[in-house]
Length: 304
Image (cartoon, rainbow, N blue to C red; front, top):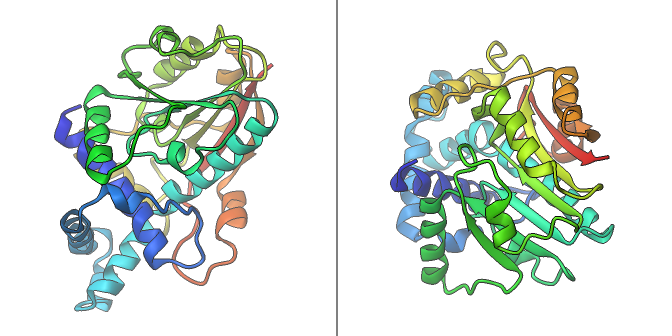
């Protein structure tokens, strides 16, 4: 991963969260800090790029909304950009808060990017947060924190690691992770880009020595990923964009296949949300275009 690529990915994710807080109602995921990681010029540049891409997403809507940049931007963000990142973040943080109330003392965010959990939840008692990400992404984040005037909380530890290649708890342990303590991992927006073997190896590396009751929250694509078009062809648009960016989507599985994969690491599915259940839980009260993404599921799996 190149520095400019990691920076851009992180900024687009921050933009989607910031835009949602500013422009959508009701709020699914209230990341009120995300805006601080973007300069006004960056926010406007990303907004313009999203709007200019509407023809790729739908020539029909490009013609229908022609000339109305605000409406175009809202349509692109609500249909394509924001649904999965917003809902999976809301789901993950709901689970993490609950697990912390039930005794979890460590939260490991894999692929953290410009995540703001450690600043929004700086009063969770006795919980240490570990952010794991590519070294260039973490360097970029620390620069952004300094520019925005944010201090690094005492309960947050940065762990620089390309975990798609470096499958070990050693760096986490060196940063202070206690294998005897109940720990929660989140792995959001990552599984699609791994092979089944790499995902298996990752789970094995991070859970073989962890205490019982530790768990992981992640999203995955079912076997319809490469065939289901979705509304306005948005599922295949997502697949095509990943391919064009040089990070092709590789992993899709049935729930039964995923259960077997997790069972190999003594992980049991505690909760599974299907696209229909995600729609009901996070989007059912809306009258806009935000709705659950087809083929995408959420999992909370616990070590038995």
